[in-house]
Length: 599
Ligand SMILES: Nc1ncnc2c1ncn2[C@@H]1O[C@H](COP(=O)(O)OP(=O)(O)OP(=O)(O)O)[C@@H](O)[C@H]1O
Image (cartoon, rainbow, N blue to C red):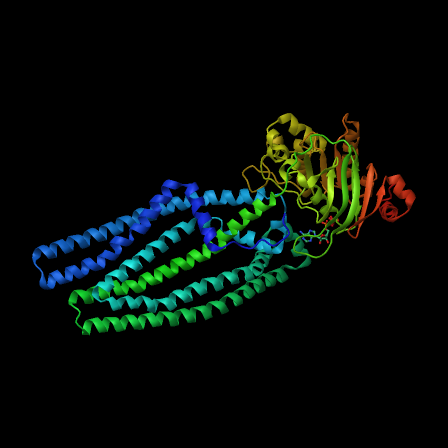
């Protein structure tokens, strides 16, 4: 992942990309939607000319002229109506199809990015959030774009008609320039603001979820922090509203002034034609076409404004995400190793999260021998989970290397490396599927393999959980679904652990506090059995890396790594570290006394 900030791409490039995506979603529908929406401009504008002709025929012409003009007027009105109806339906059907396509595309892009940067870096989180919110409205870009083209065409044709009365009437267009410029500037101002107020919006939504979701509900009631959360949410919305409304009032005032300029020019031109040499037909044409001119200018500006909103909100961010995704698949040339002989070497690795200055890992060097069960311990914030993220290629080191049997992990594509990994994490996912699938997802190609799921259940010691559920592995999880069962925190974690155990022979099993919701004894028994099984395997070529705060579990590891202040400060077996009498021995002693475990 390149370190530089990825700027938002230009609106034009984004529009081009969106159009190509729309064509891919449904070429037939997009073509019909375009032709009917833009085509409706022609009969719309010609109605004014037909009216003028009818007025001329009524005043001075014969019956034939009158009937022809009336029939033409009727035909144009009918055609305009027909094109509008067909256009609306085509646009709606196309938007439905494009919405599904766009959402799927955004999900694919987001989940396909190997790193976590777009989920963890504040500036990127704002963009991703806006994109997620606007993913379905992206499909409306087409409608606004076609309508904007139609409105421009109406504007051009109307100007041409007006100039048939007198070429000087073409100058009316110039008086519309201030309105167009102000409208353009207004869109830009609002968009710049959207990014600025993004964090207020996110904070308000976060506090809304805190106040309405069940899990924080208990804590909020006990601590009586509900009022504080409510106030915080109110303040966040108020801050957003203050910034937005100040800017909106200013831009609206400018827009009104610009519209007043055009209105004065129009009134003056009507007076000029009516009192000059203009015929009755000319006055009718000027009044009909001219009054529509103001409407078309308004329409064009509105469409362009909406287009800018959605286009800038969604389109540019979509292209940005595509580029981020493409950049993140950068330099990867080697295949993932099939087996591991010597192990994984972390060589002088330093790392800080993108967008921050602090070093979370500082010159960390380690050797994780193949076949070993390795435990990583350290105080909160010592960098244990960060090390796990680097080993899973969620991020690349800023300096130093991670070598697998001597081969630089940076050269191995993240997706390929992850086929060799398994993992269970403290912040596990709750997949509300039937239990069998919720576990089977840990190894997608074997998700339906009953035996594989059964083995994972055994490894996670989750047999009792399965038996307690009415429909066993077929039980739907999550109580918001029909016949769904809700699990306790610890039970959800066991499901996540079983999922992590789905792969039979991962080269690296990452267990980042995977049993924090289980009691210490259960965790100990679980990992003791697991470690015994791992040691009994014939080809001891995989590594289990366990992050835990429980020293009763940690002590059975073959290698214990102690982290503190971004560095590895001690490493060895339990016996060696106790003998050494350093930090590990201190921490172990404290827990041993607290839990009265045997020293
Ligand atoms: N996405 C992020 N962006 C910026 N800083 C982060 C991010 N994730 C973690 N950190 C910081 O990195 C430091 C180490 O975090 P890490 O999660 O690796 O610690 P840990 O040792 O696993 O802690 P714990 O025992 O509490 O899980 C913390 O100070 C944390 O604030």
